[in-house]
Each structure stands twice: as structure tokens, then as C-alpha cells.
Amino acid sequence: MNKFELNPPSVGGIRPLHAFALLALAFGSSVAAAQGMTHDHGATHGATPAAPTPSPATPPAAGAHDHGATHRAPPAAAAASPSPQAPDAPVPQAAMDHGDMQGGSPPADARDPDAYANGHERGTGEHVPPGVTKLHLGDEHSFASFKLNRLERVFPRRGGNHTAYEGQLKFGGDFNHAVLKAEGEVAGGKLHESRTELLWGHAIAAYWDSQLGLRHDGGEGPSRTWLAFGVEGTAPYWIHTRVTAYLGQSGRTALRLEAEYDAYLTQKLVLQPKTEWHFYSKNDPEQGIGKGLSSASLGLRLRYEFTPQISPYIGVEWQRSFGRTADFMRDAGGRASQTRWVAGLSFWF
Image (cartoon, rainbow, N blue to C red; front, side, top):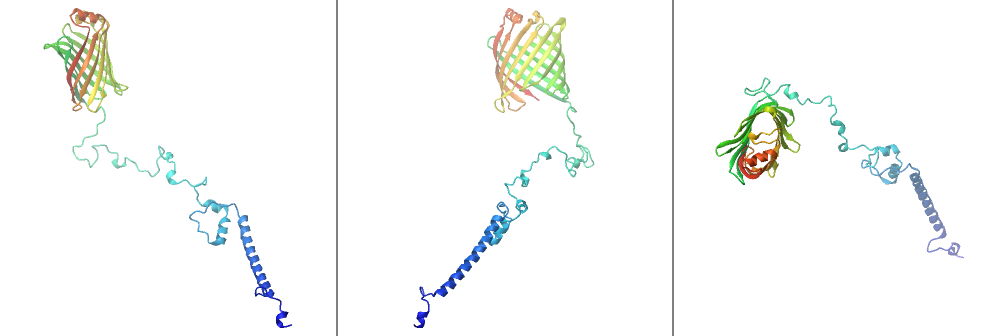
């Protein structure tokens, strides 16, 4: 037997002893790797419940060891990391409720908004130049105004044309003032009818004045004088209202109701409906007035305001007499009801 016959046969060029050594070395390496993986896997499953996704501030994981450490972080550390889903996460400053800051006590170091004036009013103080007057508040000044509501030419469907006027002069303060009112009709160059009132007005509420004074009726026929008392102002929905009661001679009484409204179609074009009603307690044949509702009128005027002070207008007015007043009108050759066109001018200053 030669030396080659004593050696065990090789397989694929590798002798059995060498193959066994290589197999043992490979097995040992596999066991070591399996033990390392088993250790890390068990550590992963043995860690506390998984924390939320690490915040951007958390350093990135470096290898398997760091990744495992991140999952094993205690709950307190995980809660310290801000998360928008956490119920007790701090509220952003922009979403804070500032309601408590409104109407509450100012901070202790807040600046006094009036401190710059040092308690001085307009026109007072050491640095005020000459000529600056002291500030005057409401009703410390008296003023005068004149307003001509109507100066119009009247064109009735039957009968002659005539001119009508209605205006008032006011002087005084906001709370107390004198008012002179005048209205009437001029036909054929003669004063056909006139009514003049001198009243003392006193503010009793916002937009409302009480008025007390005298009224004098002139024109054709005997004159009449009345004691007048009423209220005038702006009702809700901006309806200008006037209610005046009168007490005359021989126990006569009267009541007058007026209402008008300015409907602004544009800033300069104004449509003004107006109504007026008269009541008397006794017949007055010399004045052509009957007891009860004597007359009523309803007018509609369209004016154009070149300026708020000056405005021409055109319109139409329907007027009717009732009861004994209508009888007196027919006996005098007139008509109890008539419609008339008007064109005029209103202004104030």
C-alpha cells in the first residue's frame, strides 16, 4: 500500500479533516451571531411601551445599539418631548385666550393714557399759545338757524294759483331754545291764510322737544289766538313727527298732527311724503271750520339737494275737507277735495 492509499479519500479536492475543521468554525460563528441577535431582540421586546416618534430635537439613532436605547427611554423622557397629539402639551402662544385681558384690571405698570395732558384741558397750561379758547361742551353755546321748508307755487286743478310758505326761526341752546314758526298762503297779492307760533322748546329726550307758547291765526276773517303745547321730534325709522294741542277762546280746542319722512333715493335726490291732520272741538263758521276732523292732506315732494342747504323740488298734494268744514267750503263756492301740483324751493342756514 502506498502512502496515498493510507490517507482517506478526498471529496472534491478537500480532505475530510479539513472539511470538519471548516464546518466547526462556521458553526461556531453562526452560534455567536445567533446569540448576539437573540440578545438584542429580547432587549427590544423587554423595553417599556414604545414612545412616540422622536422629536426633531432627539439626535438621530446611530446603529442598533442607539436604536435600542431610544426605545428603552423612560416614559418621563418621552413625555418631555413636545407632541401636537399630547393632551397636556403646551398651547401655542398665538392660540392663547386673551379674553381675560379685556375689561379687567390694568397691569400695575400700565401707562396712564391721560398722563400726557397733566390734567390740563384745551386752552389751559403754561405752553398754550394766545388765542386758543377753552373747550365748550354741549349747550354752552347759543346758536340761531333759519329753515324755510316750503316756498312753493301751487297749481290746483280748479281755481287760481297761489303761493304757500312754511318755515321756522330757532335761537338758543340744545336744551332750551325759542322757536318762531310761520306758514300761510298768499293769493292775488293778499294774505289769504296765516298761522304764526312763538314757542319755547325744551329737550325732554334724545331727538324730542316739548314746546309751549302761543299761536295766532290771521288772514281773511277774524283772527284767533291759541295757547299751544306739544312735542316735536324724530320717531323711530326717522319719521319727523309733530303733535300740538291748542286751547283757544270760548273753550275752543284743537289738535294738529304732522308726520314727514325723507327717503334718500340717491345722495342728492330725496323723496319726501308728508301728511297733516286737523281736529277742532267746536264749529267756527267765521273761519270756515267745522267740529271734528276738519281737514287732512297728503303730499309727495321730490327734491334735489344741490347742497344740503339749498334744494328745489316738485310734487303733488291731495287735500280734503270733512264734515261741517266741507259744507262751509261748498257754501263758499269751493271744493271739499282737490289735487294740486307744486314747485318750490327749500333752504336753511
